Length: 342
Ligand code: XIL
Image 1: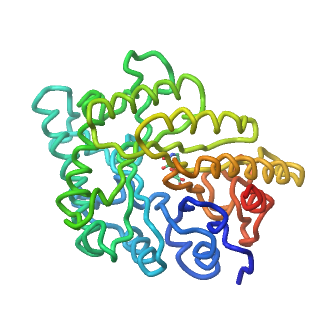
Image 2: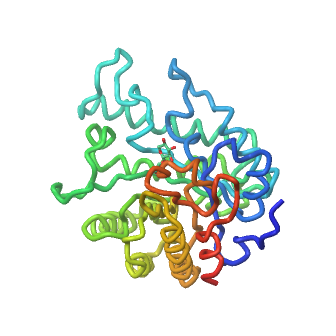
């Protein structure tokens, strides 16, 4: 068993990690529960994870396992993700006869209803088994309501990605997702004695850089101005050693001016390949400096989540050992750096 001091004790915000059920047992679970106080399902609460091949709503054993693991170990669950263009069944965007939905009013109505049913089915399931949201028995505290809705380029006037959701519903789909999620998670299936128990986030990548950040900022500002129930802004922060730390600081500073909280939702920092000892040391300093910035922003930060527990399990392992622990569950320089930023 690990004898390291818990990393979560060195920060004033909840510290999260993305996992699947492999991290809920054995030595991995020991390391996880020692150092983290929040989990996110890396894949098993994404839109396609909730449906059987015949399109029926069928919660996965993985989602259930993660909720039970969180409830048993006093971990918070940050949900990821309700509405996205990726890892979403094709039939979402088709009529029952398999033909594609268009932007006709009749087809818009089909997709609105489908989104609403999707969100309400998840809320009903997650409250039915673990109790209403906000009650002591339910570990769910937040959702990424929409993910990656901002365009990577500047070609479109509204700055929004032309996703299948957008192609049918236009920009309206973002408003609808928050409105439905608020109704389901903070009203219909919420503990009546609590006030907005589930925080609703928008989430995106490359939010620390240039034009994408401007488009993201404009969108979030517009949601807030129009009274859309958004509680928080997520910055994925899939970084690399070349991203200046000052840019992370400037990003959190800029969004701190808005009346929302912020979360670092998917942090990873590969070294590049081949993985070398100097690269791992440089990575350690990078995590140290990044966590210093996060600590300085504690008052604005809802949570910071690392996108995986061990390097070999990372979606970016090909880019070079991006996380805090190696495959033997040993703390890397990255871990010591994160702890040392205190
Ligand atoms: C990634 C997972 O880590 C992979 O296991 C999966 O194959 C693809 O998705 N942005 C997101 C996350 O919001 O959901 C993605 O997670 C990484 C990029």
